[in-house]
Image (cartoon, rainbow, N blue to C red; front, side, top):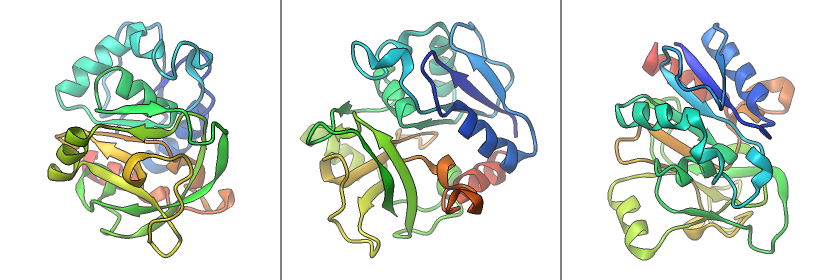
Length: 227
């Protein structure tokens, strides 16, 4: 599986996702600079976490207009999978690849800790190694992770099974939402389920040496699905 990691000014998790993809695929991901005009041949595009352009204007808004994003949007619409994590999720929303908006956290505090998520959909590119309603532990580190979508949009997400993960307690119940996201949503798919955006970081808990490996299954799922 060939993968590409996009590097923006202010990215700080590009190396983390590089390590996770290298471990899962046995191949070195292409590290693609934001000002490049075209991606190499790739089976997966990763938009990493960080603070692209210092989060000026609005988180992800400037990065969404980087030169490379034209090719990313084109390829995403053609079916190339995109994994958009934290700031990458914000970029994907700003670029129109995913619906909704990411607002400042409730309480206006930066949140950095492990969280529990309930897997809402099993199978597919990203969740093939997870079970429905499985509780996993990932890490969050964000200030603008409060996912919002209007009533009609929320209904569409539910009708199309586009909610990927919800924040939950260790027992899988509602009640531990770190940022105020609507309906405890932590991650969503596009309609074709080829783009996944999520605020928590699977790559930060993808190896026992990091304190947990619940995120490893996501990368294993991608390798199995994409070869």
